Length: 428
Image (cartoon, rainbow, N blue to C red):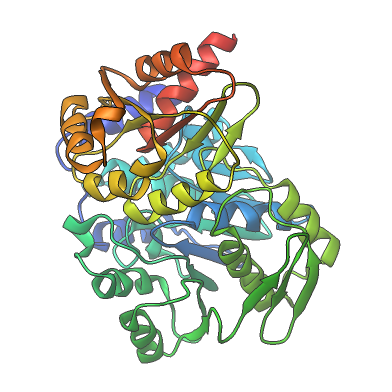
């Protein structure tokens, strides 16, 4: 069989191959193909897992390390508009040609080993980064940790950001079960950083059982600050008078502290100056994480899709100052704790524009409407409307919102991606 010649053809083939099994737990198949690829990193590897905050932590690490002059590679997911967003080399998106070469390399050694879309693309991007002559590789873990395809690589520093309830069908329904899964990225004798202020005991126990070098928030590193600036304190390093990260939101100092703890661990291999840290944190960008768009009405994009993230989004909305009305454009996967998300943010929303997402796993707009009406206090004082797509829901919110109002687009990545794509097409 001839392999596809373009990136869109490759992605279509991978989606078609695995229309049925979206997630297939276990690393044996991935490890077998990894060995045939002879995939290995010759630079330090930082791996980041967590329920929320992992994308922000990866982005901060990348920004600071690029400022310091290092050639950094980043694997981050999912993507909003272009698959290329998942792989960055030295701050630039991987080209179609680089990705096609990487897909070809995996296909050439795969043999009859079956790989899911996620496993195949992960191996391809890891291969691409391993060949990119990097000084450091930053790898975001997808679901869980222990059984995630990224975990076939041994990290020099592993970070677990927050541990909360999500992906219950695969990871279990308690923080202790999920904490054990996340701790699966820790390695014996290597730094294992956890920035969750209340880490599950299962995570601590696993780190100790395997002999990882566990760094806990509040014990091994912490932060302090006032309105103007903040300070990081680690085991042997302090960084004072830091500007707040440009990523807005309540938990960003936890994420920034985890990033600085990782840099403290790697200070011999990757020394980073104070100014590089300051500038890197101030200039970091990450789409869809409490991203406030320019213009009026105020539009906020946030991929909050579990109660923990929705509570943080609600807190951030509360810190924004007065807006007469808040419109929500919301869509969610069926298997999420939708009631918990609505409960966490419902008090801040006046008008709901609910969208059915383009996925077989999506909850329908009418399902979401029933949940909003059952969960939100005083539903008769709020409006609830249903739309076939996020773009239609957003267009409706824009047509009704006054210039001093705000529209918060949140839920699944597909909700935010749908609105991003619609805005892009109207701008061009």
